[in-house]
Image 1 (cartoon, one colour):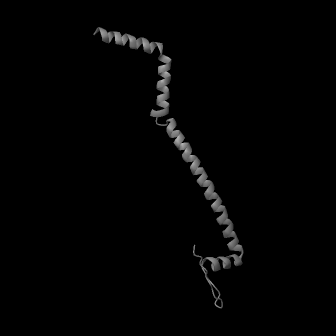
Image 2 (cartoon, one colour; image 1 turned 180 degrees about the vertical axis):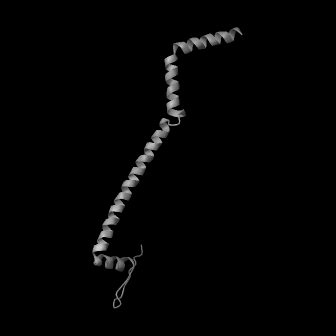
Image 3 (cartoon, helix red, strand yellow; image 1 turned 60 degrees about the horizontal axis):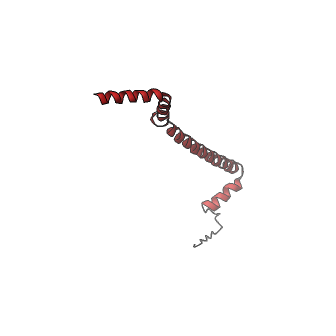
Length: 104
């Protein structure tokens, strides 16, 4: 029992002497690893937000390009004919279409 009491006294002395260091260490461990909103999760969320913002910018650019093409199609009948001929291989009744395929 004497060794146990000596151990408790030395532990109490150590805690009293280093109480600020122990408190700070405990606080940092809680903030970095154990808390629901810990720093590791915050960094992961920041990375995800950054990736999503880049994706939003990409889709905004695509939307603007598509809107511009749609406006051109609504105002220019020649653009409709061009897309019909190139993409859907449509033709006038008196025309012939030749398709050339390149072998790679």
